[in-house]
Length: 64
Image (cartoon, rainbow, N blue to C red; front, side):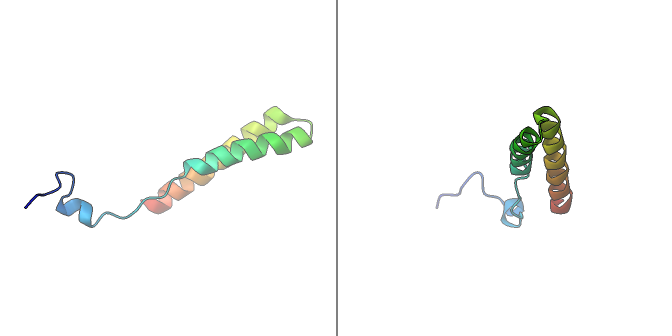
């Protein structure tokens, strides 16, 4: 009988985790586009980055 070396009793009860990096990526791109439409692409990019990072942190805190 073969056993999987990566399988142990602690992994059997592990919860699936969510990836929050998508919020950073989408926030950055959307912020640059929206900022570009308003004539301020750099500020939009930074604002989108901050909003995306806050959303990713909120998801991380919820997942803990």
